[in-house]
Length: 338
Image (cartoon, rainbow, N blue to C red; front, side):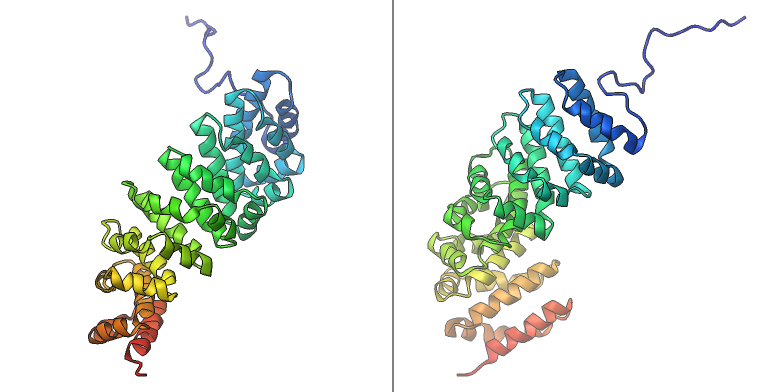
């Protein structure tokens, strides 16, 4: 006859380091209290449970409403590395859902900036994931700019050794500089990005060039790209093995060649041939950027003369519509007679 026996082991799905919580939103008020506990283990357990709950957008709304963001802001300064790690994890998860507007209302961006130099790479990664997701919203990008954080992010880009974090930094800066690039330009952004264009990591090269596109929109950015001799590197990247790098390099040249200095710097480094090659790229962004860059070079008499024999290539550009329209403009510029 069988006898019931109690096991001395916990069931396999029980985590002794995680707080026991009620169902759904009813758990959050209790967890918020525990986040403020003086007991380290209680704070750690509450944070682990909170990270699980924040994957549900409904829970994010409730957490913000009951004041969890203020509790998390305080924990960013906690002496315990695990607490800081799980706090930044909870915040970046919230930023991927509905927490971004709450971040602005509760000044979370400035609080996160205290951890830019945290010794734990995982903590810094979570911080930059949160900022990246914030910057995806126009209001979030504006919030980062208004917080005065751009010079610190530019400086951090130079000093950060972790390439994954470098990529996140570049993602954030590319979005923020579309709002306002002035602080970045005055902080030496262009020389730093020039260094990143030479990275052995294709993803870093691509993101550095994409960030340079944003930098090159204002006139001061166009001037600095020329002054810091970035254009020869961009022309070299038009032949990069990574197509995204090619497309973004053409995008920077598209803006840099608006000025006379930029136009002739591109012509002097023989940018026309690799740009023409990009008209056959499988990436529509590469075809579009190359077409617009060639249009800028076609405004110079030397560029116009060279491109006249290549007009048939522009006539073949049909898809997508933006590329077709850009090609029509290019043809008008190239065929213009003084």
